[in-house]
Length: 380
Ligand code: CMC
Image 1 (cartoon, protein in one colour):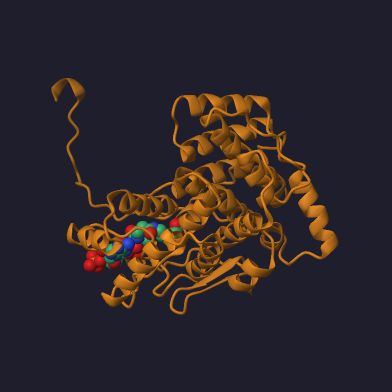
Image 2 (image 1 turned 45 degrees about the horizontal axis):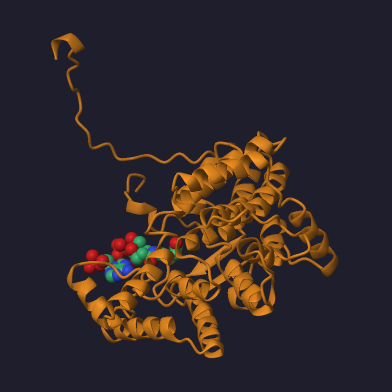
C-alpha cells in the first residue's frame, strides 16, 4: 500500500487544516465552517482574511483595527515601482511581473528571513496589502499612466479599483469586486496553496511561499483559466460565431472548454453559482447581456450533452471573467486578481502548517535504468 502511486496526488490527504473544506459531491465550500454563500454576501474580504488568519470572525472593533493595519502597509518602495516599470516596458506578462515584484518586496521587509507563525502573519499582512499596489501600478504604467498612490481610507477592494482607474469606484463595483475577492480567498489544497505549503514546510519565509504560489496559479489548468474563458468569449464575439458552435468545434478538435471541470467538484462550483447570479444582476442593470447570453448558451449546451452530469461542470473561472469585464478590468489582469485574493489563503495555510511543521517530502517510483555502467567522459 505504501507504494501505491496516486498520479497528481488525487485524493491524497497530506495535512490537517481548519481553514477551508470543499465538498465536491454536493458543491459546498466553507471557510472555517462558514458557508461561502454567507461570507460572499455578508462579509468583506478583510473580515474573511481575519477569519482565515486569526480563527474567528472579527468584532467591529477588531475589524477596524485589522483593516487599518492592513491599509497602513499598502505603500511599496519606489525601487519596486521602478522594477514594475521596467517589467511593463519589457512587455512582461502580468502574472510573471507580479511573481517578480512579490519576490522583490521581501528586500524591504526587515523581518523577511523569519518564519515562525507570528512573523509569517505579519509578513503576510504586508504582502497582501502591497500586491494590489504592485498590480495596479503595473497596469497603469502599461497604459502609459502614472501609478496612483493607495488611499488608506478605502477598503481593500475599493482601493484596488481606485488605484487602477484613478477615480473612486461606485458602491456596486466595490461590492462586486469585494465579493470576488472573498470567493477566491481559499480553496483547500489546490495546486498553488500546496506549492506555498511545500515551500513553507522547509521553514522558508512566506515571501518565497507566495512567490511560488503565484507561479503555480499562473498555469491554464489552475488560475489561468479565467483569462482563457474571457478570451474565448471575445473570440466568439469577434468571429460572430454561435457560442454553441464554438464549443462543438472545440470538442471535435479534442480541446477542453476553459472554465469547466474541476479536480474536486463533480457538480457546479458554488462560487460559479454566486458569480453567475452577480453577472445576471449586473447584466440586468446595465442592459448589456452579451457575456451572460454566451456563457448561458455554453452551459446549457454542455448540460444537454451530459457533460455536466458527468462532473465536468462550470467552475469559478467560468463566470469570474465576465464579472471583471463589467468592472472594466483588462483580461490579462484576471489571474493576477485571483492571486491578489488567494495570497490570503496561501499565507493562512503556510502559517497553519508551520505551527506544527513537518517537511513535505514525497517520493517518486523510480523507473529509470539500474546498474548502468559508468564510462569516463574521455571514453564516451
Ligand atoms: N472540457 C472538456 N473535457 C474536460 C474538461 C473540459 N474543461 N475538463 C475535464 N475534461 C475531461 C477530460 O478530457 C477527461 O476525459 P477522458 O476521461 O475522456 O479523457 C475527464 O474530463 C477527466 O479530466 P482530467 O484532466 O483527468 O481531470 P483533472 O481532475 O485532472 O482536471 C482540470 C481538472 C481543472 C485540470 C480540468 O477539468 C481542466 O483542464 N479544465 C479546464 C481548465 C479550467 O477550467 N481550470 C480551472 C480549474 S478551477 C479554478 C482553479 O482551481 O484554479
